[in-house]
Length: 157
Image (tube, rainbow, N blue to C red; front, side, top):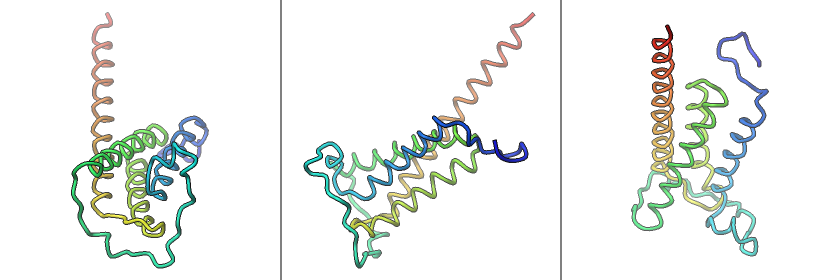
């Protein structure tokens, strides 16, 4: 533990830290590649292509949500929802976990043009929606746990 007891960061919890770091790295790797099948087929795996002149103009462009694109957005939503849950159980603070998840969402989209891909502001919105949904799930879990704990206290003679 580091700090004065208020807002401490638990650096000693290795497994939670490893999961947070590993999941965040996976999201960043997905930022650098074009096709997720490259991760499963080593014969197609190619190094990321670094753009010498990144195109930042497409950031505010929209897209259609049909077919494969819809599945990609579901992946964004779930990926950042899981990241939020991992960050919260690591840091145990809403501000740190939400701030880190939203920051990573923005950074991964802004980094995509550097790898000859098109980062989109709408993807940041989808990532943040996944983060927000995870926050709601975590709050519901906390409310249920608090209700169970209160009912056990009342049941004691």
